[in-house]
Image 1: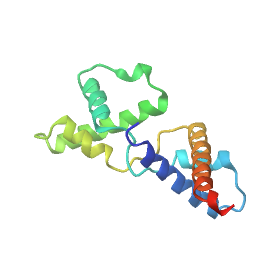
Image 2 (image 1 turned 90 degrees about the vertical axis):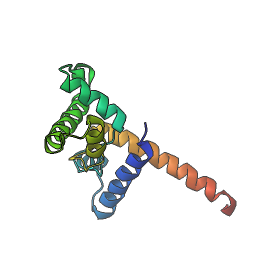
Image 3 (image 1 turned 90 degrees about the horizontal axis):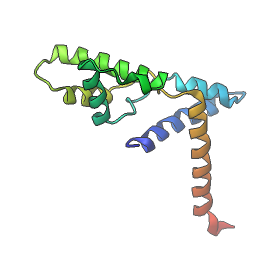
Length: 138
């Protein structure tokens, strides 16, 4: 995925903020909260967003194979692109998609379970990197 590392850093930043502010740590609860928190951007490439939005505009509905959260994300992107295109009719759909996906998103469009798995993998990866870096100390 094109923005996987940036997205992971964003999720881990929120995770660390939650962990440091909690008296009682409940990972499922934290993951649920993170999944519904606003994100810095839509975590999809401009090209992919353009393809989906163009298909929707042409009357083809690529939604049937999508999971509900992904469908919801593309619906939001489409809505914003149409709004932007109405205000700027001379802009291309690609340019509108490029602008829209860089805007803050209302949420991550990932399930709490997916976020939990991502956090566990990332924590393990960071632990291994730290262990490698500090290997000479032991």
